[in-house]
Structures are given as structure tokens and as C-alpha cells.
Length: 268
Length: 268
Image (tube, rainbow over all chains, first blue to last red; front, side, top):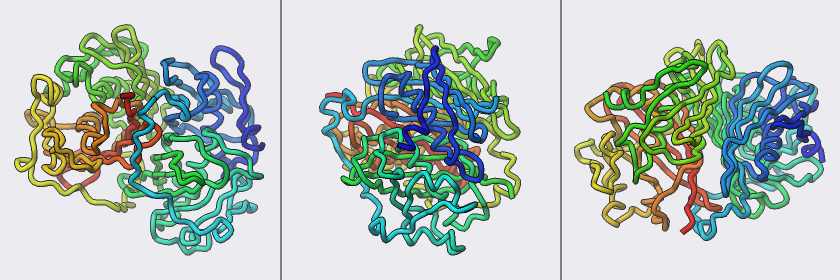
């Protein structure tokens, strides 16, 4: 239960939670952004007393390294269906993330027959079976240690960047699960939406990384067991920024999360 | 200068700003969500001492009616390029919006040659000239009073819903400008992304409204003068929610803003 234990938080009263940025979740020494968001979201969910981050946004202020961390939460509205929580993740004497999220219960959101209205204009990404995709294993330096915490299998057409043969398209598709078959809850979806290599690697952009300014995720459903199908695309690289849009589908063919992040094209 | 004056805020010290939800910006008695966001964003921009909301997210907690209002702001990080601000809009003794935004200067974001990297995978929506589109004029009840504050011209193919003939597609395209040719700045883009009729009206969903839970906008550039081209689409109506994705392009054919909101399918 690596994910559950490595994102656990301990209530310390007055909306404050003590936690720790655990080692092994880093990319080049800095903790993965989705992992940091999970630390904040778990504390926010406890404050909200509701399980699912229906919509959550994090602004990334500073990188995080392993060590003690604190989440400061404030419930700004407790409603009949949702609770909205403002939060900050702090470590190393700095604020790392500023977060706002609305929590609810996506299995019974109180929508009554509203849930019966369904219309989906898209299909899950077509992927070869996981064993025919390209497994991303952590290396000494690249792929990063974080890849030892998750199980990523990239679509072969989207995996060439690591061999110096990017596809040329700003698209990354693949399977995601936690290691050792650990079940994934809706907080785990926040990890999935920031776990894949950036689309910029395939788009042949002249960048070594695209730091996240802000990430928003919408959780639509609790995922069923097994692999998640994921796809990330970018349509606009302009003005020094790019967006990366993500979709996560579960094994039953149901959309479980959507995400969008704004990332920076670093100065070269 | 209706928009500028109707979104003005007055600093009251310690990050607090006094303002007013002005009459005429409402839809069915409740102020338009984009307009409320503009009140918060103008105060946040002053606190940030930076002009442009590079990325901003609002969670909608309660509806707002005309009357005095307060914006409470806190700069949570002042960096070399960006300032991130957390804020709340309060009125009628209630918190209406919880907001977080990162402000910068989109004309000179400090990106150096990063701005030279451009790749755009989309084109502005094709629209007949504004005079050949369907003007949305405020009525006694419908269209709402808000439509007197902006100048909306809907694509004829997307305007039939008001005559009981929705297109069947979750798509709304049209031109946007402020009344009387008032110039539009990047705060005004936050109005544009929430000014159009909901895609649900064209998708023939059995709803009279789709209340916004959360709206995120990314501002990529300051718009040039004149009409803005806008398009709003929905791909996923599931679990009692739908997302609405927006794009705003200026007269030079440049993407100036992207938006996504999560909205609720109300119980019927």
C-alpha cells in the first residue's frame, strides 16, 4: 500500500495536518506534482468530511524535496452536497502549493435523476494491451525514481522520445496503475493525471522540462479495478506557455477524470 | 466604460477591497459568474501588482445579487515572474467565490526566447460576419438583463435553441465584445469565457440551467481591438456533471484565452 501510506496525513487540530514528502516520488530530485497534490488533497478530504475531489486546482509555487511537510486547510463552505476547502502545502519553510477544491461523493452526488443524463462525445484511447506497450522503469537518472512508484505502459507510438525518436505529435497515451496492484481511489486519480512524460517530449519542443504553473482535475467517477487508460494532448504552445489536457478512463470504459495543466516553456 | 467602472474595486488595506455587485449584470436575478470573477480578479491583480490573470480558478459557493461586496486577497507567493493570490468574494454576509490565481505580464512574461516557441494545433472558429450572426438582446425575462452589458452574436447554426430548435450538438460559437466598443483587457476575457448560453441548451439536455461549480481560465495574450471569436464545447455529460471548454481568439487570429468549467446537471 505504498501510495496510501506515502500520502497519509495526521490531523493536528485547527485544520492543520502533519505529513511527509516521502522519498522515491521524485523526478530529478523534486517530488512529482501529482504526488504533492495528493498530500494536500488527502488532508482537504478529511477537513471536508467528503471522499472525492470533484474539482481541485493547485498552483505550484516551489519544488518539494523529501522531508516533513504541513497542510493547512480551511473549509470555506459546507453545503448539502459539496464542501469547498482552501489549502496550502508547506515544507522546508516555504509554501509549495496553493490549492482549492470542492469535495463530494461521486457515487451519490445528491444529483438524483441528474445522474441519468449521460452524453459522451469521445471514446477511450485505443491502446495495445499493457504487455505490448512500453514499460517505463526507473533508471539511475532517467527515467526518474518516481517511475518506480507507479506502473506506466506507454503506447509504442508515443514512447520513442526516450530513444531520441519523438513522434512529432504533442500526444502521450498509455496505461497507468499503482505498483503491486494497489487499488486506486479518486485521490489516486490526481496522481494519474500528472504521472506521464510531458507531451512536449513528443512535440519536439526544445525543452528539457515543462514546469507546471497550475493543474486542475475533475473527478467524474470512482475507478473500477485494474489498469486505467490515459491520454494527454496539447493544442496550444503560445506566449511561453502550453496547456496539457488529460483524460483518464477505467477498465469499464468510463471516463473517471479530466485534467488540464498550464505549464511553462522554460527560458533556454 | 461600463465594464471598467462596474468592476472597479477600492483598496481598504490589508488586502481587503470594497466593491459592489452592480445591477444589470444578472441572469434571472443572479449576477453572471464571469462578472463576479472579474470583481475578484481586479482586486487580486492590484494585490499582485501584475496585470494579467495567467491562470485563475473560481469555485462558486453562492449566488450574488446587486449590493455591496468585499474581496479579501492574500498574496501567497511573490516571484520574479508571477504572483499567486488567494481570494474570496463576499456579499450579503456570505462567501460567494473562493478564488486562486497566478498573475503575470503576458506581453513580457519573462520567458525570453521561450516566447519564440509556438505551435498551434487548432484554428479560430469559422463564423459569419457579426452582422450575419444572431444578436442576443436582453428581454424582459429572456434573454437575461446581462445581455445588455455585452454584445453577443451567435453563429446562426447555434442560435436555434432560443426558438425551441436546438442544434442537437453541445456547441455554442459566436462573437463577443463589450458594449459601446469599450476596449477589453485580460480581465475582460474572464467575462467572455462565461458570457455565452450554456452548451446544454443546444445539446437538448433536459435542464433549464447548468450552475457552475468551478471555472478555470488561462490567459495567453492581451486581445487586439475589436470582436473576439469564441467557441464552447462539451464532450462529457456524466455522473451529474458536464464540463464546458472555451476558446477565445482575437481579431488577429491569436488564441487569447482558454477556459474550462465544471457545471452541475440540476436535479429535475
